[in-house]
Amino acid sequence: MRNEIIFRLSRPYKISMTAAVAKVVLPAANGDITILPDRAPTLILLTNGLLQVLDKDNKPQERYFIKGGVADVARNRCAVSAEKVVAFDNIDIARATEKRDEAAHQDDKDFYQMIIDKLTLLNR
Image (cartoon, rainbow, N blue to C red):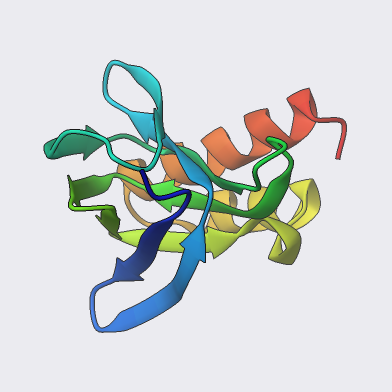
């Protein structure tokens, strides 16, 4: 049994992260799902939410807000492709509010509102 998985996070035309990690928590359509080493092959539909890369002690190492997408899990690899990726540390409530108010499409407004809601819950 391996104790890590190869994780790749990408959006159209750009790879945001590739690393060997202990586990990944994905915002799946039916609730958050944790990807561990030796997981059965799975294709997962993702929703707008917070994707977290955790260490072996379940502490977040990297966090990203993603806009939808899919995750392909097989052979100790997890490849996530999302429409939009925003690093957790690169946005705050004020910036998310500004982006929401500037958004031309409802799905973008919904994405930034989700960020505002999550940051509010986390008191950030």
